[in-house]
Length: 566
Image (cartoon, rainbow, N blue to C red; front, side):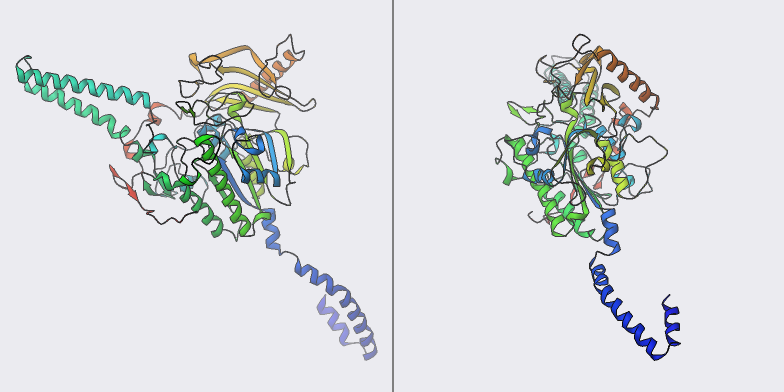
């Protein structure tokens, strides 16, 4: 077009050229401000970043929904998490897919009920992406730093050992009894009171030693085997130094944001807080009005603030979706004497590992994306941790897998207010592989029906938890089967205090039949998966043990004291 115009101008006489020049000058005077304005607009690359935002996923461990200020707590200070809610969207019916850590996180990372795929992680003993193992780098992540195993009290030198505590007591008692028999026989032989051959005594002593070594080689070194820190495929601390774990994890998170700020990134920060042992740095101990647990939560809130500060400092606030949640509810049974080491689940009944009771599966859910999500919004629609996977895939411009059922739903329409209801009609609440409860969102009436088919037996009966057992069982004599099921309308009774019956609820039979049909349809979509928690799968295998050094001399500290105070 420009070339044609120039050819025409060359054939015109001088007067016509002057007229055209005047007209051209006039149009230039009009168009120049428009061009200048366009030049001031963000470049196309910036627009693509807004379309595909940075995504920061923040997940607490064992945090109760009642532990945060914006969800009603007035004894623990959480100003940074509260700021997220003030600047974004707060969900009041955000539901975990399971009341325990591993299945809940499996559902969070795959968008599927854990029953569909079993355990998400099956080991970390691999050296590259080509190895057939389940290290986070083999699940789509480009960088990993953190603790690959569960945080347990054995990791804290000052705490009482936790892993298989009762079984270890029995092993130790058996070792003492065998040793006592051996010593008694030896003394009897020396004093002539017992006629026993030295060869027999040697065999007995050898058996005592082998028995002790057989179990102490694993349980006696739990801190070395399980409490490790890794960067990608490399073990950096064995055992981990708990006093500096918070600083290292925060340092890595901030460094990751700073290294990747020029392109869209995804950061999944999975806190060690507020799982026991409550690893809390000295400057936060004694600060809250809720004991050590409150101190731990307040430190986690401070860590959230540090992450938000670096996002703001790097100019990423308006191009970053931040999400905060917990993997499930607080652990009510976690106590030490009269000291409560677990969280508070607000008005909701039950807690961690308690099947379908609301206290174990209703969790905080907060989203912030300034300019895209309306600030100060509260949404009462049922949503799930499984929704995060399809939401992230959508925002990243990807497509959901077509070879499997995805149970989660994209939350963006609900978060932006373009739809009034979530896409979830039924949500199924499992305890392990056992279906305990189902909720039905009857959208036309606003009712949220929840039917419990199985509930744990509390101990003592009216205690609201399974004290003395550690966690509530999912099956067997530790549960009660209900026929007809216990029915609640959570829109009227969120605490699940008064079960409905055919006498008190005219819709009782209709609701139970509707939920029953939904269960049948759901179960038709399930296919068997290998048993992930069989004895063979969970027994310790020394040849799979991540080791920094030459097995069994597995200990190292590659971090040193390089960390800076944060």
